[in-house]
Length: 130
Image 1 (cartoon, rainbow, N blue to C red):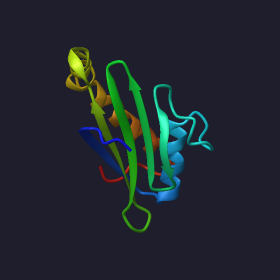
Image 2: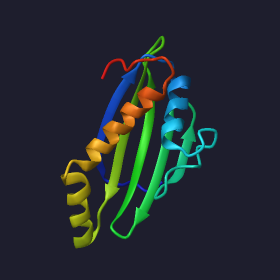
Image 3: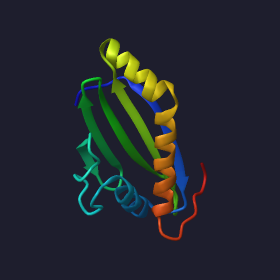
């Protein structure tokens, strides 16, 4: 696995066990929650280690990137989801693209919304510790 530069990490905790949060993660991220390979356009599945880690990778003209979800077991009925972003933006066009995506704050908003949606997808469980 190629190592990309670290961009950021966002996390949110939920009052549910890792298996239930894993299912919610797949419901939000995958077109078919029964198949982790059905990731969004622009990504490919790099690793699915239920219920601990879902790693996605992608690339296009302006960047190479990875979005990695790690689920930490916080004990009885508690799970933290960490969404890590790793990316490289080569050249002048890459630098402009990074400014538009990362520098604008848009990436942060999208990832935090994704974490909110994961929490909402855990049946009957309100978001816990943030």
